Length: 301
Ligand code: ATP
Ligand code: MG
Image (cartoon, rainbow, N blue to C red; front, side, top):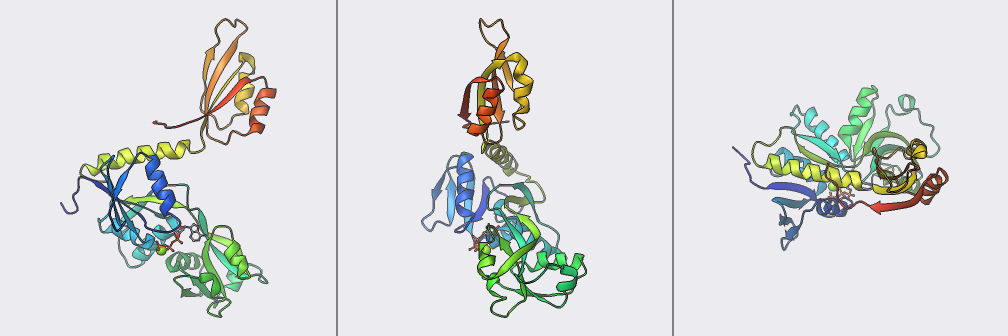
């Protein structure tokens, strides 16, 4: 079969916003590597998983061509290229397997500060600068709006000031770049984050098992990112109230305390939200004592 391999190859961004968090996530999942001299290829040491470091725009194509098995890329790039392929009548060769929780941003319309936002009225005949013509095109088409899409590869937010466009459709995280150019963000076209992308069909060789192991580990890493183990003691009677104060907790382990016939128990609960001082004080007021918050190092569901 073509592209048969006994190691898994993941494409990640070589240098940019997603590089460091992607490497950190994979390292947290237990991967380690030997870097090639040109830092283009990382040979996996702890697991048969290698990394290819590339421009983020190349990642969906590398998966489509079978050069890489998985990739970490912005959802914005993945969907743009999917729509683009669909518009050329090509089948979809890749899909999103997981949201990875970093690289969050939104593809948004940015309009001159003096405008009101009434897309159906305002947009017809206007020029919209963007690096995401397929995503924008589909949004316009769904609303039956006829506008001109001005393709820019970078510095989209400058286009209105330079007279190349009337408004923009651009990636926004804080909104600072837009407002520095007298534009205001008004509507979200796509909510984005880095995603793990893979082929639409599952692997038919040993890569299936390697990918499954990696996904399980990534799920574990993402699940415990904010998780803490909470330990406390309390009279059994107040337990229901305590659990109401812990809506983000997994079902707790409850153990009777030795020599405490009064029904005091020790409680252990895995909590998925931030364990602030405020929350601990609320628990104490509700009858808990001996509160302890422990970091979770690893988790395997
Ligand atoms: P490359 O050289 O790999 O092509 P790039 O310039 O296209 O790099 P970056 O600017 O590093 O890419 O952005 C990579 C991804 O980071 C974006 O596709 C997007 O998913 C995400 N991202 C998060 N916040 C922002 C933001 N404020 N502006 C642009 N992209 C952002
Ligand atoms: Mg790019």
